Length: 426
Image 1: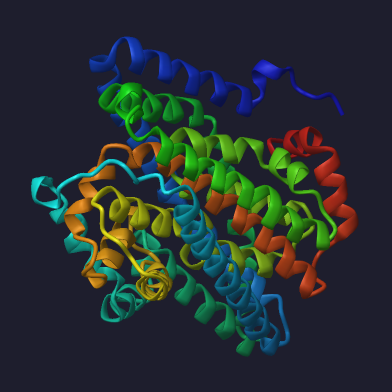
Image 2: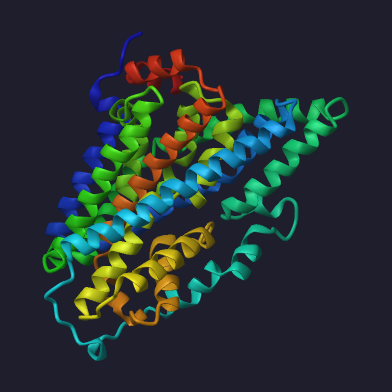
């Protein structure tokens, strides 16, 4: 099969758009700030299709299963995996923060801190148990399909899939309808992805134009520490998991290059969710596994966000000369474990969960968040990338555990990524 020339490849177009956005934001910052609607508009377009994609994929995946116990087993294994690796990410952030101490030496007086973080304090309420329950239960059976809450979509899709299995003979036409509907839904995804370079350009131009590259000079050590920690987590921890399960993480990332570049350009892991789901299914993971693990992972398996939470908490404490003994750090870790799970489905979970965590740890004033408010945007790209890669690995691993992974197809896709990409666009 003839492979398209590089300038026709979406990943190349996104790279060019990101570079153009950085240049525009650097040299013409006011104009760069005005590009914000392009990035916001593209993300809204993608969010528009996320709920139907998850609903169709998961509903059909469960409907095609005859053993409902298998669905429960898949969910249980996925949650065990999520708990282990999200907790490991929190611990790694804590260890790195203690070893490198990126906030040490700033000697900032807490009394001098001020800033508008009321929005995050208000939204942090949604990470409580009450907020979590409120988030996961929809108002009606169909309201999740017109909203943004992934957990609600998951709940309705699981219920619909189970109902189709239990009424298989009477509801076969409904299952067939969903099957036919999946083709145009994913075609819409392909159409929207053509606009990815425009979205990436707008988002990057706005970020650089508003905050400027100079704004991270004083805090470059924290940003650098976070990026290096996340990269090592991907290469060493997730790389070892991938190797143990029979695939190469670098080949997987190259296979998902367009989706990961889109995440980098828009700072939103949700923007690549439909594409990642389609590619993982194409790579040999069963539809049920992909439909259940990927969207659930976006809520419960936030490796990048977890590294950020403990590392940023320690940075603030160190910058304010607040000593946290080991027992207090353990409490911080336990609180972060709960708040990171409770934030499932909350928009902007990274900064919100940090606010929720600090609100329960009185030793660190929540106003300390203003120290990193200006550079949080520069760390959001890394958070989103790490989250997306972690969830892709988790999906393949769970599929392998459940013997619902076509390993021959997986290796073929990882070894011939450009050829697979051409087939998907047909």
